[in-house]
Image (tube, rainbow, N blue to C red; front, side, top):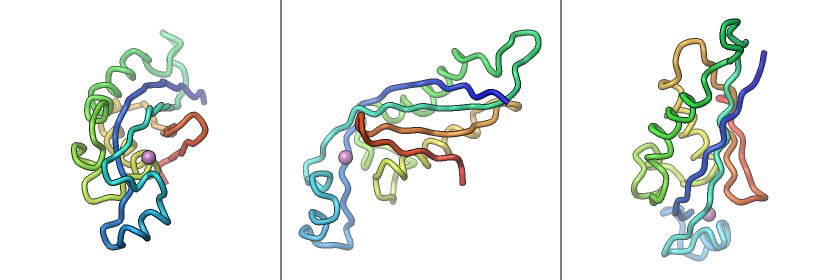
Length: 136
Ligand code: NI
């Protein structure tokens, strides 16, 4: 089994705010991320698929095609967007990087061709903070 990763990038705005709590509690829990007028991140997205190399190509999957699928179905929806307001699959959820990684997995999965197995979504919110999701 070989693991193949494509890295993509997007910029997006969000805020972390639980409407069931007052502003003070939101600021206690989320700090700067509760800022009422939004803030942005430079996200780095790592999509890893796994499989056995095709004997004719030596590839698990054409990585240019993988990039195109990620661009069309994920980056187009997220880049230069407000994650809380503009992104259909984040509606009604807390807009954390954890939930975003799960949302990206669920969006991407149906668009991968048969025989290509999604292994993980790794999402950097800052150079020093990232989350990983393996589908369970
Ligand atoms: Ni943030």
